[in-house]
Amino acid sequence: MNALQRLVARGRTACLFVGAALAPLMSCAASVQVAVASNFALPMQKIAATFEADSGHKVVLSIGSTGRFYAQIRNGAPFDVLLAADDQTPLKLEAEGLGTRGGSFIYATGRLVLWSAKPNLVDDKGAILAGGGYNRLALADPRVAPYGWAAAQTLQKMNLSRLQASAVQAENIGQTYQFVQSGNADIGFVALSQVMQDGKIGQGSAWLVPAAMHSPIRQGAALLVKGKDNPAAVALVAYLRGDKARAIIRRHGYEL
Image 1 (cartoon, rainbow, N blue to C red):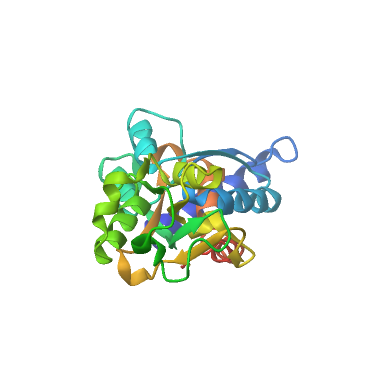
Image 2: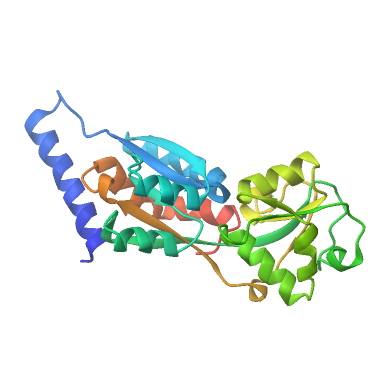
């Protein structure tokens, strides 16, 4: 039994003890505060709803950039669980004593797409990047956003790194999507999960960037020290690795 499995078992034992000693005066329902990378907002909202229905626990989501959450957690933000856009931040938190030892794992691998809200603008090979025919390109800041770094690697692979100089740079992948969706940029590198509905691109046009064109976008979860004795946090971490959550994750374009 690994460290994460021991935490899950301990949380279940605590619930059973409370139920046996105090039922029906007290239940094991609790609330969990979750920091979620913006690319994972839609699937996590659905996972939270099914988790609440199945467990009776309450999930409170905060959506934003992984870099900002990391700084907030280091400054004492009251999160129980972090769902990052990369796999290094959870490990850093664990090494710094803010994440539970052995409590981090990869919950999804993201895919990058070049997307436009306009139909028929982006071709299925991304040739528009070299050929022009658009006003602005948007991408997330490669220095802090994993999807932005993947976009920068893709442009380098295509010998188009020069496009970064004139691109609209967003703080995170959520803001990148907003730039393109609103028309402030014609095209942009966004997460597949942001534009996929029922297994296909919901609107506009897109090029699914081949995975070989950039480093894998492995997204890690961390059970934070604050959440290690919270039965809702421990249960949610276990739930993320279960069949229901994994099915939702796949439907939004992630790989497992």
